[in-house]
Image 1 (tube, rainbow, N blue to C red):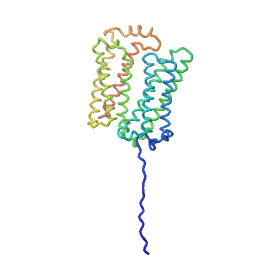
Image 2: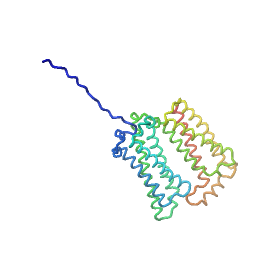
Image 3: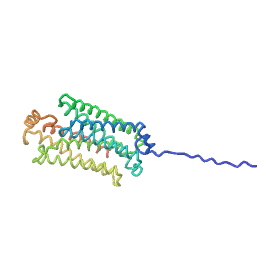
Image 4: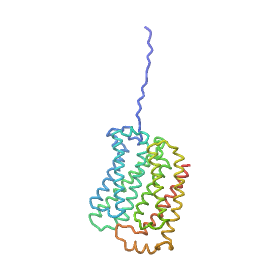
Length: 312
């Protein structure tokens, strides 16, 4: 009897990998939490939760900057919780393209917010507290905030170290600059929440308008990218960056001239003497606000210039 040829079929089984590095090879399973990236995100979740819980428990968040730190920790906690929830429930499969950008965006914002909170809370709040139980808890919250900052930085570094596996715009230089620009814009809003700094002076009101317009344009670019809207995206990004450079150039000139110039309103020395020498704890005097906004304006101008260069 003649041998019958046997046809062998090789079956290759592949795992679909969604964004988020190696942990998402088992998306939808609780095992995602015991993978390296899952453990990092659990550390982010627990550290931010502990930070704002300690601050709330002892009521150590008075003033504008204290409220900013509390908001930052809550915001980071909510973002990380959202990422973990979506991954565990496999909801990202419905929004596969958008999810390519979302985890790295959250990690970058988490790093910036936790870093700013760690610095601001320790330098402008904890050092004014009297020795005792509330101050001890506030110091613990600061240390835990530093831990969360390291955890977010680890995720960002890990993601950027494997760019070929995650085709994400937000992981590029231009995308990271967008995140920095929007974050610096948020900080500027924190320091100009006192209308006395700019009201009744048209040039300073123009500067505030510049900060608002550029922040909105940057957030629109980020949201359109996250939503993968069909637009001529490169041209749109270049146009936004160029317009923002022009607007911030006017602000970097007008804000210092009208805030620190002796011939415009109250002199800077008088403001510094009245508001900073007798300021109450946990408050920010007008002089510090003026200087902070001027510095942040310069930082954002540099970021927009770099963004324009990379967008081209």
